Structures are given as C-alpha cells and as structure tokens.
Length: 268
Image (tube, rainbow, N blue to C red; front, side, top):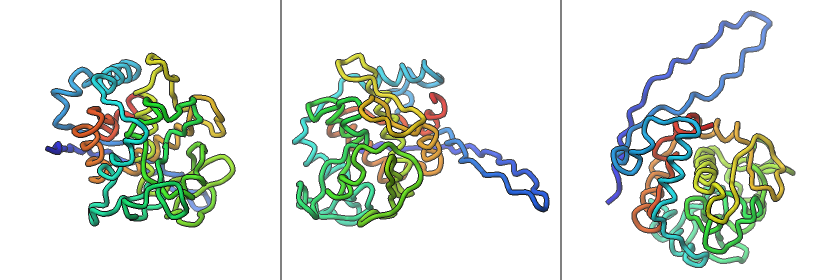
C-alpha cells in the first residue's frame, strides 16, 4: 500500500526591497522548502524528528542504511520498469533528463535505447556496478543512451546548451543542468547518496561540495545549486510514488529528502 503523504505547508514571508530609479533589482533567492509531516514520522523517522545538522544527518544515515535489500546491476532493469513507469502509459518509462516516454522493451545499449543512468556518477568515488552504491535504485534512472553519454560524469550546475533529446536539459564542458521539472529530483538523489554512504561500509564517503570538475573524487557539486533546485522544484507525485515503490517492493529504505525536503537546509 502506498503511503499517504500529509503535507502541512508553512507560509514563508518574502520581503522585497524597494527598487529606486536607476538601480538594478535584487536577485530573489529560492524560498526554503516548507516543513512537512508524513505518515512515517512516528515510525520510520522517529529517531530523526526534531534534530538538525550533523545529528540529523547521522540519524538519517542509520535509518536508511538499516535492513536494506541490495540489488544486483542486472536486477535494475526490471526494477526501473516499475519505479519509473509512465503513469499515462504502463508500457513505457519516463526518461529522467529527456522527459521522453519510451517503451520499456527498448532497454539496452544501442542508439534509441534507454539505459541505467547513475545520477551520482560512477567515477565520483569509484562506485562500480557491483552491488552497493553503484546499484542503489534511489539514484539510478532510465535515460536515452546518447543523453546518458552526454551527461557522462559531469557535476551539476546551471548553464550550457541544449542538445538532441535534451528535453530542456543543458550541458557544457564541466557541468550538466537537468530540465526544470526534475532539478529537485536530481538534488534529492545526490543528497540521499551523501547521507546513505558515509564510508563505514567499505565504500567511499560520498559528499556534495560547492564546485564542479571534481574528477574521480567522491564529491559532486554544486551544493549551493542543488539546494536551490530542491527549493524550486519540490517533490511531485511521480517522485513520491517512486520512493514508495523502492521502499515497499525493492530496497526497503526511503529517500528522506523526498519525504522531508526541508531537511536539506537543516543539514547543509
């Protein structure tokens, strides 16, 4: 049974300074994510409620690392056909960066196929495709083969140019900007990985930082931009359903930033 999410949005007052003639208007920043409540607060998240900073991050790490079912790389094919199913066409999946609805049967490595995109790029911390962070369903999404190659291992930032089947996503020499509709999704996946993998399980300690061109280091940026995307693009029904399916059917853990997007600012 899919969880019912009860969102209690708190109004946030935005103050706009008066603009004098001849002066440039100030740039408005994204409104911080509003506080939420979920059906899991008294059970799954009970040891995290009320905490902030490193205490919250530590509690969430313990919660989302416990009793996890780990998938093999090959098992991701069938899992993605469930987690990313097009709600308007059960024969298709929605591609993350492109927004294209494509037949589930077109999974593979050829032109026109969709494959398994690692949102936290494999080379950022040597994730590999062995069972572990490199097969964690919370950050692996379907994407067109060519678009997956275009993203490569680029860090996330704003800027660049669109390309074939981009769906509005952009790329330049050192960064990738997802289409607006999934910017928050990308941010919450990256920050989930930073909490889930802390270097205490034989894998790298994954962390966001505030720069691009991180190479093979176990870091991905830009944190300030990811935080902004989390605020600008709150979780939608597709993302929430995906979290529920992963929790109930596959890994049995949740992405806490989908349930509580305000925890991003509480930690970082």
